[in-house]
Image (cartoon, rainbow, N blue to C red; front, side, top):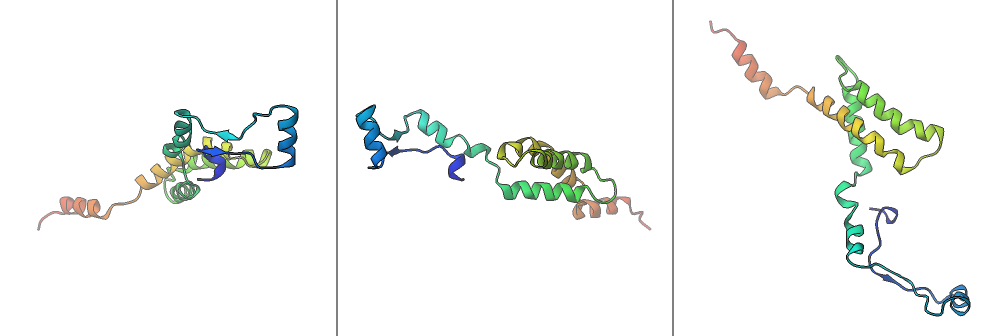
Length: 136
């Protein structure tokens, strides 16, 4: 995870800098650095892990949905097109921000599930052929 998506845990002192000395002299001699406070520090530090979706996995979901959007039947096309619209439209209109990716995740997962569901399974096909053959 990147530092922008995590909550820092620990204690950080202020650097010995001219501006910090001026602030201490002028406003607050007891000014100090940051620190995380328990139990909230641990909760906020662990918060994003169960729900974090890596970009690579999201890319695989989009590729699977794209694969299900081509060919006969195209069961994943509506969900995949909607996911792509939700992903591309805010970037085209405004600018990229990670919060705009969140609404595209559910339809991308639906498209990937529909695409994977349509993959033929050889062992089931062979079993079905054995049942349908007529003994001579």
